[in-house]
Image 1 (cartoon, rainbow, N blue to C red):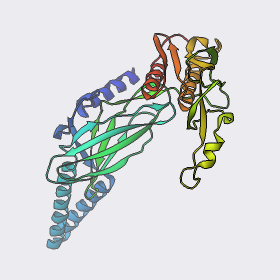
Image 2: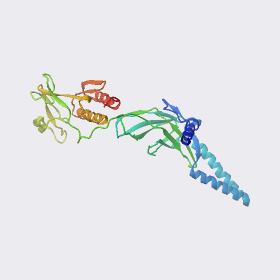
Image 3: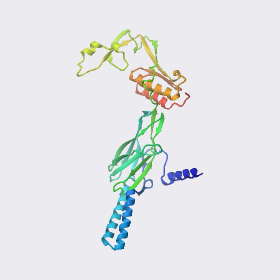
Amino acid sequence: MLTSLRQRFRNWLDQSLFQLRDAEAGEVLLTQRRVFIVPSRPGLAFAVVLVLLFLCSVNYNLSLGFGLTFLLAACAVIDMHLTFRNLAYLYLTAGKAAAVFAGEDALFELHLTNRRKHARYAIMLGFIGRGLPAIERAMDVSAHSTSHLTLALTTTHRGWQPAPRIRLRTRFPLGLLRAWSYWQPDSRALVYPQPEASASAPPLPLEPIEKSDGNGVAGHQDFAGVRTYQSGDSLKHLAWRQIARLDTDLDAKLITKQFEGGAVSDLAIDFASLPYDMTLEDKLSRMTRWILEAEARQLAYAFRLGDSVYAAALGPAHQRACLRALALYQGAP
């Protein structure tokens, strides 16, 4: 019962007092009602000093004491205005978040726009939430300009990773007061499965087939020319005569022979062909590693995972489509 009441009280604080919202799309304006301000610890100590100065001035009837007390109090009032103004009426926009592999940092791009004639200084931004590190980054925003900032979040699992809630706070200029606001950006990063370690993963599932017009990864019949060496090419096919003619100081590249015809290898990365006793995440990790290896070796590959079936292809678009299917797969293991 007590836990339930505490949770209701926290929800009331979030929704009514701090106005915490769901993801906010588009440009967000920090209005006055969204900026909160309270004295900091140095500010509380400063208030105690002011009270003591005032009591001493009253007790000893010190005119200069009254003057000093009211001067310091006026400085505190001006500081309160400047601290609040430093954060209010900022425009916030979420940028793009690139896809990453599980275990890497998802980078969320943020844009702060200042359309007022005064600059903003020492604004701290950081993710807040249970289990998140208390890491903040500081930034300044000049008058009539936009500043950009990137916040990193370590990913742990595949799928969509939404951006956590962000807290903006400032103590500029004197640090006597602390102003802050909350923002939930409408941004998310796609997290691919973590590739299986190369040391424990089996080689690519190459199946030899006969094709009369194939460009042989394994073809050895008709010499078709030479090309730049690529990772995965056999060292037996290096064109040593052409390599010897190169100027090693200017163009130290390896050249390999290219053949047409003969036996080539058909590469299909198929979820159904993986061992039955593997867990779902292990299967997806292995397929991820095979995709990266096939791209590195310039081997066209087909892809089959549930309803996602892609013909043999190669290139960034094909790689992204396959990795996206792995990241969002929700089928049976």
